[in-house]
Amino acid sequence: MGERPAAYIVILGDQGIAQDFGVDHGIAAQSILLGAREKGLGGCMIGSIQRDRLRELLAIPGKYDILLVLALGRPREEVVIEEVGPGGDIKYWRDAQGVHHVPKRRLEDIILN
Image (cartoon, rainbow, N blue to C red; front, side, top):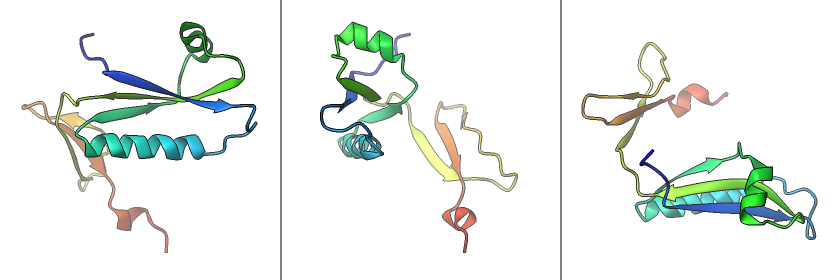
């Protein structure tokens, strides 16, 4: 409570245009989130949605598939992406100052040659 996004974007697929939307909505969502980040905003892509309830609340016609929801707003916390330590732990954590640490594996460690 008290920490909610400033806006949501519901990405829909028009069944009158296509029956299968492939990954285009994911690409569009990522582009929107990258643009938002460039403007100092943060966001989250949400795929686990109560679609029937959302359709009812927003009166979304049945010809549209609800594909994704984006949540956008001003980040309230600082996030630091850092290299995974020697123990290999990838769990996120917060330090005493409230900084959110996100360990990530090195590119060299995840690419197969």
